[in-house]
Image 1 (cartoon, rainbow, N blue to C red):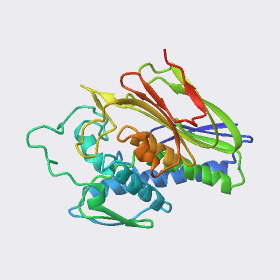
Image 2 (cartoon, helix red, strand yellow):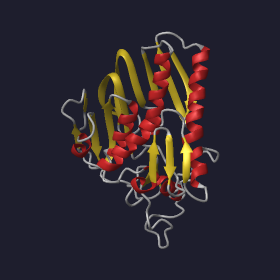
Image 3 (cartoon, one colour):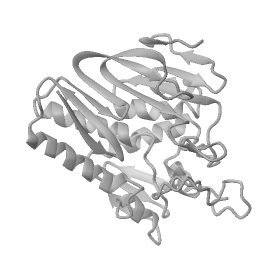
Image 4 (tube, rainbow, N blue to C red):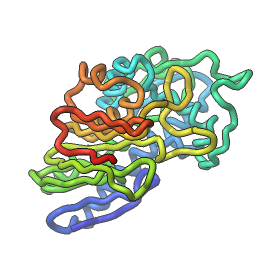
Length: 294
């Protein structure tokens, strides 16, 4: 059975052997609402929006289960040499990926008088213990690289705890598969939406994809930014990652735009395929699928 619902500004779906009880559906939607109330930078009343508009830094109590996401960001930030950085939120707003989805560039990273010439980094600005986060300055934290994957994992955990061990949670392309099922996933061409350029089998784990064309506008702007510069990453068009959790797969699929796979493999066990901007491809040795490029 398939249940579809709106979450994180897009369409999600949960596939199970039996229909989900209404009480479990409510539990899922309430959990999603709590997550977005904390982490959505598109909501003016969210925790991260309020923290960004504060007069100074501060300490914030986060939803239960947030600590592992912040730990994951620590690892990704270190392994990418600071290139993956949740503090690019303000850069995205200035480039037009703002709460209004204006996609109008207000201030480019190399404009004269750029208000963020002195860049704040995750490692310098954010500390955390458990589900508590301290900001040394008012900054806009954007958890887009990991957040949706974490939410998929949390929804999956809710289903498991409710006695639904076999399921697929599809957070608009971020998939968590549980219960011994094997799911065949088509890999979409970033340059031709709807065209499949590969396939992969997912069993008891997660797959996430990233592509520069998912949010692209203007003269070469897109949503995957280099934390050191605030400019869009270049060289990779799309990535697909299989990992034990969706949060890990989500973060690594973004990190592959910012660091070499070997560097990331020093801290994570994962499989991947990536498509470079020149249409060449790189696939890990144990990737359970293929790319079929002309």
